[in-house]
Image (cartoon, rainbow, N blue to C red; front, side, top):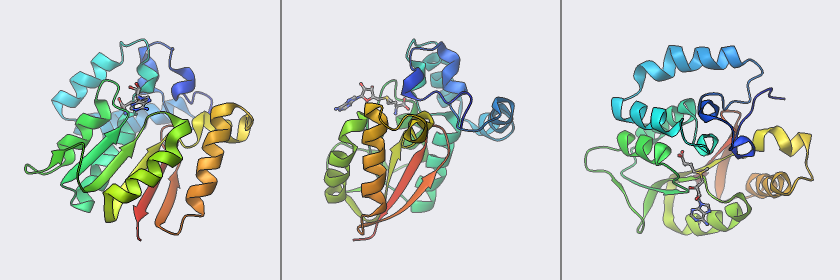
Length: 196
Ligand SMILES: C[S@@+](CC[C@H](N)C(=O)[O-])C[C@H]1O[C@@H](n2cnc3c(N)ncnc32)[C@H](O)[C@@H]1O
């Protein structure tokens, strides 16, 4: 179990929560990842937004720097040109996505998408999933944030959002329309590649 998993469960913590959002047991190991691999590759404008977001009283709501780096790499590998995000906050993950798109790529709010990132109200994740399966092309990727909910899916499974998250995880694992992978990065990230 994480010692410092932040997630939205810790969203009122001071701004540093944006930089401590991990399920890793070692906070110093997480800082090492950020400082060795993430921050040196971070575009200036993304760094500026991250630093500004870290002063927000609800900074813990933002996606983590290592998580948006992973999403950017996946977007590049996918050759995505159109992307959508559900749950924007200060726009940190949205900007990271935009920076990973090619020059003719777009963040759009309607049409046919290659990539979607869902980071809004957790109780609606299954509703978003059904909608996005109509909007994301076959072969496209849908990424869902906070799918381990600071570890509460195991530690406090009856907590309302933990229960909703468990229900979502069970449904996704059984959904033949997607190939899935649960990643223990940030607060838990579930990748779904649409296959049907
Ligand atoms: C966890 S934050 C998003 C963080 C953002 N992805 C980032 O990295 O900075 C969740 C956001 O979703 C928004 N939200 C909550 N419910 C929503 C809904 N039903 N539709 C759209 N946005 C919603 C909240 O206002 C909040 O800005």
